Image (tube, rainbow, N blue to C red; front, side):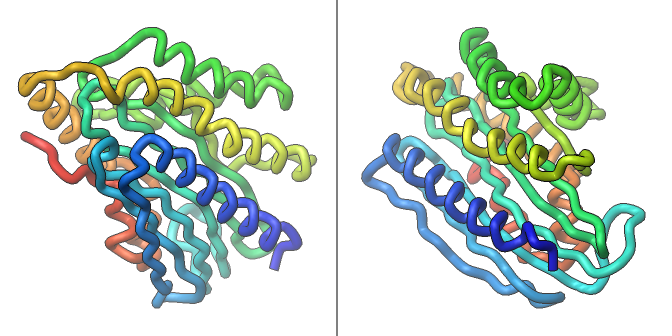
Length: 264
């Protein structure tokens, strides 16, 4: 077992709780419901935390920590352990965007690395000031660790969150990194936790601006159509979804990212 594992798990569970607390301030009448699950294909499991309410039509903030004898993705072979927090929001108000966030730590054999990021997907209503704020928070979190990181991770997000069959990005971008490890793992871990710690700063001001915007039935229909594109990306291209299914993970937890309603 890596010397980093327990420290990382404690951090991730604390981050999960702090994000849920922040989200619940937007919709105080509705609380996230936690549901544990066990990883049957190896050891460990996870905890789903889901809410359906007046502001969040559906939101999920999940933690998992699973391990087994054979890593299900990549060319690396050997016993593995993977832990992370992932979340998705699907908002009642069409003017409020969907946001996705994930940070993860993975061990395979004697190797280990970090990954994660967050991205913003307006559901038909893009506001320049929201996009600028979202990216500025990401840049501020990364700049202390190298001025090259934000441009690199932002480009990664553009490339990764790309819907090939529509030939366009899923949303307005963000940051994304995977298999990240330098010769200074302590510094890498500081950068990774900086990404986690800044997430709510990136989205909460946007939600405070948008959740009470006036909207029409036509706005709702556009939102549902854009949600369909989100579903298509997650089922066709998303690595996390593939990892979950290929590793024998909990289908309910894997599909928490799906919106409650969409339209084709």
